Image 1 (cartoon, protein in one colour):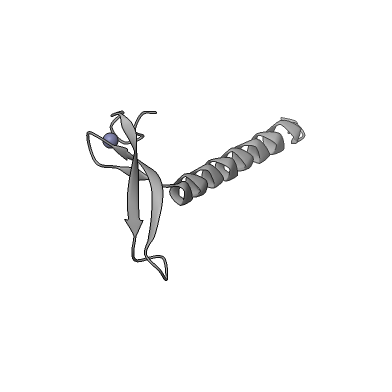
Image 2 (spheres, rainbow, N blue to C red; image 1 turned 90 degrees about the horizontal axis):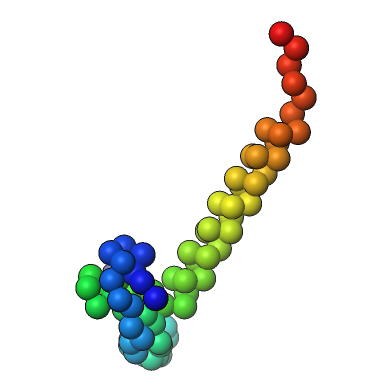
Length: 73
Ligand SMILES: [Zn+2]
């Protein structure tokens, strides 16, 4: 997998989540070897959800434009 910021190589890394969890929790994530960008499962879920919402909005806008009746000149 390639980094979305710099196209560097992403590798699996184990991170300790100390802020978001009540108890310290190890989690598996992807880390870019070049820029240090980290993508954990929650970040990946949010990005995928946002992309799906954007795609749905574009589809809705396109459908509205194509179904709108033509205006007579
Ligand atoms: Zn990177």
